[in-house]
Image (cartoon, rainbow, N blue to C red):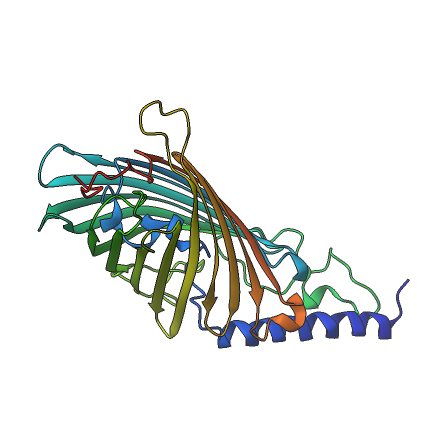
Length: 357
């Protein structure tokens, strides 16, 4: 049986950990309300509903993230999205996308489940430029499991007794809400990315808003807490180095949500291992990318990706640099993404035409 001093030490250690974690979260530059993936280039519909059908005839992506494994029950997030282009033979066309995610956090099994449907209208403004505007509507559910949690009132002074009353106010353990979003995006591309000269240029810039109606975000059934509107600014580019197999890919995201802000710039280097064979198609194109991002005041993110024909697999790892590194030992989160695109992102040799045509 543990002594009173031993129990006190355990309680103090847990209290200190929770205080440190809370302090770290308050000082993060990241939003504490919405989920987000480190490989944000593989979660386009979570950045902007205007991205639906903008760049690909068909795109299917899945992501999984395991975060903060070293400090207790990890945060596990799974996402799946699909988008396609409608009326693709027209000068102007439409896009539709669906994305869903499930997030589970901590000992209380705090769960967030959401499914969204996005529609976009895409206008061709020049030979190589498109502007897209999109709307998103979604349904979300959050739940929590209080069974199995330990409370301070259940320590009798000698030992922990789970049969003692918790002293906590009972509240509903789940709630639902309707979510909304909207955005615009501009896309420019001079030619297929992987022609032999490799001198193509691509650019995407977008801005979007999510939760503009500030839905109620509490288990108490009132408006004591709301989900603040989130503003997203994002951009990426692909710059082929002429007569080389190297492509530079700078990118950035900015999230502003209530008092929280996240700024993440980054750069990856893509090496085209081989192009597809021109006539037989037996040789499949493939490329390897490596690089990183810096989520300011929070984490460095190392990224690696392998692309083969229509498929891609991406791996990333977050290394904490915030106050949380004291308890996380700088270990943040592992993430994996899988993607299918049709047609292949590699395109054809020396087409001289935009990939959007």
